[in-house]
Length: 236
Image (cartoon, rainbow, N blue to C red):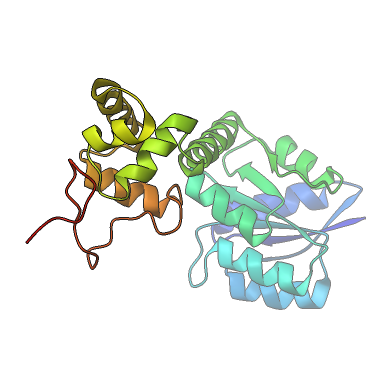
């Protein structure tokens, strides 16, 4: 017998869910309450196997309620009941320990099937809207990961960038690396593009923040400025 706790402040829906659960030979509704705080008290007393948790509740919301119940009853599976398919909601609920999402206006057979689903490591999502939610969430993770990846500079561009970090201009960089000034300027432009910078100084600042400059190769405002054409300390 799977013990089910309902935390839902819409009385009509809560009563309908309780009736649907109790009508099943393998399920038992151990209580239906309207706040996360009441849900926590009942979870402590009745030790449910599954909790159906509304996300929008008076007082603590369903995310906080999930976190509190999982702390007290770590083996309980908490399913979030909501119609709000927002990626940030998905992320917060999974971080709180939710086992999955169920559409509040979805058919009861889908909800009952979710209750009967064996515990799994992956979050369960029912309903087309929520499938789209997960897709959007995963897309956001991919974009975030791409933004955090080191900028793919070539070896030569890194060499040019290191000299840019010393405050050197294209002419001196070209002489140092044995290339034409035209080629050096091309490398500088590629570096600016890849770092999303609009100036050489901004590129150096971005590179420093990303850890792309060798130690000691960053323009330091407190050091004596160099002549970008010669690489020697500028005369006052």
